[in-house]
Amino acid sequence: MTLFAIAFLLALTLATATRLWLAGRHIRHVFGRRDSVPAEFEGRITLDAHRKAADYTVEKTRLGRLDTLAGAVLLLALTFGGGLQWLSVEIARAFDSGGYAHGIALIVSVVVISSLIDLPFSLYRTFVIEAHFGFNRMTLRLFFADMLKHTALGALFGIPLLALVLWLMAVMGESWWLYTWATWIGFNLLVLMIYPTVIAPMFNKFSPLADESLKERIERLLQKCGFRSQGLFVMDSSRRSSHGNAYFTGFGAAKRIVLFDTLISRLAPTEIEAVLAHELGHFSHHHVGKRMAVLFAASFAFLAAAGWLIGQDWFYASLGVEARSTAMALLLFFLAAPPFLFLLNPIASLYSRRHEYEADAYAAAHANAADLVHALVKLYQDNAATLTPDPLHSAFYDSHPPAVLRIARLQAQVR
Image: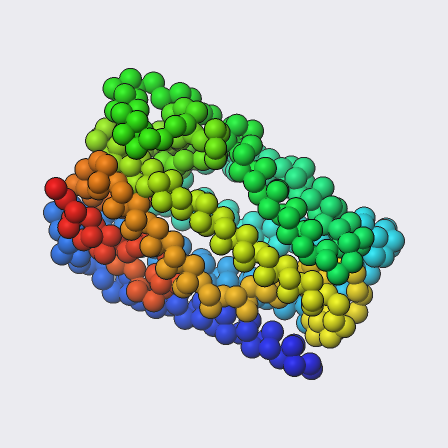
């Protein structure tokens, strides 16, 4: 066994064991505080709602542990188990080995296998856990219709992109990864630009905000913040779930504000204004641009590493593969990298939580901090978000600050 093979096994073992350990900590921490509402939320969150959030969190985390194990087993089966080598040989019976068609078929096959393994987890999450806690409004027909649409979009955009990348790898020599990086940036910007008007309407209906009073309130806020958008829209999220949210999408002249219909039905106008002020804070602080810059910088380093590794014979042999090709190189790299990168999760989470605090401060300055507190408390309760996450689990995974810390900081800013 090569040194890299040993390193990969150690990284996979460490990442999987850490995920399982963190999940166990989270379950014990949340369940152990199930029967007591945190003092900061007494009188705001009922004990029944707190218990529901704890049970919901525990069930999702337990399923996540099984998902983690399934992912590790699949990765071992594809690499040391000879799965990728077998797929390459079988696909070569239909397509010339090493050709574009062979490479595309190989990568698509792995994506399909991974999706099929994930399907039972998605079904259980939606129709057992979400349904049990009263959140799911999705029908089986709608679930599979969405899945078919996602598959069609993946094929429509993904296969041409993959073909282009394989072509770049074949003709651009050792600098292929630099051209691929530029292509990746262009692709991301294209999707970001067309998502609001082309992709999102394939899954949901978007209607102009009809409540004139709320519309005027939001437009005053936008004017106060110097923000321009292409419109205010309400999304029929209640077709799939009772969870509430709001978001901004697009960039440049294509920006638009989207409110979930479930959010409008639950929050008061002043609370909706405060939630939107928080989202405006992200734009004011250029968080979207900063995150994209980090993503592009990381992908630059990522692809540079791939550009070096695909020329090393030991890279293939260490992961159970004899057949060398550009497509196999991409597959191996994208399969092998996550275990090595897992321990960087807390850095990404910390960066995201810092942005959330900045957006909260912006909302407190341009709306009413008390209204944002009221809105968040309602959303925590309606979405069954636990108020007592395990601190270490939260540090690894949570993009938003824990509820207790976030509310405390906002209350200090109440005017």
